[in-house]
Length: 144
Image 1 (cartoon, helix red, strand yellow):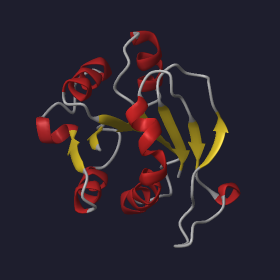
Image 2 (image 1 turned 90 degrees about the vertical axis):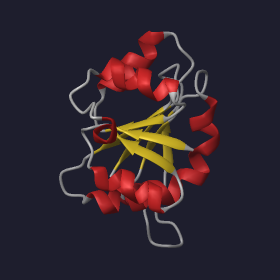
Image 3 (image 1 turned 135 degrees about the horizontal axis):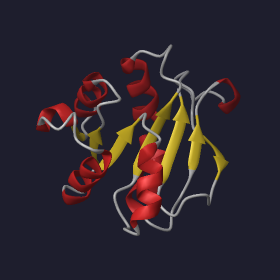
Image 4 (image 1 turned 90 degrees about the horizontal axis):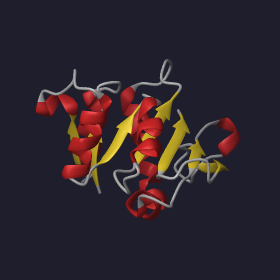
């Protein structure tokens, strides 16, 4: 999977994804950190990347676009979680999310990670579905 990390998230997240073997770029890698969200989505679509952001506008833009890609992951509740911990949770759960992320349009899901979601064998919170079918794009959300 290939990712484009929005400026609302630390480049540390992109570095961790690369270290885990994923193709990941941060908007700063392209010097587009001040670009409009629609331009970031266009870049992700062109490069077949999944957008990862803390910005809820991406869900609205994807819903309104009528396009089938890109998919997006929305990371919420960032205040008390270091980017390396966000990355660990995301990386631990990507294998279970891959099919939905790559499906694009017609596949929508919302996920949360936290005390109510349980723990994986490694002690990391794992994803649990909290609502499916709200959006017509694949929007994956977790509250870290």
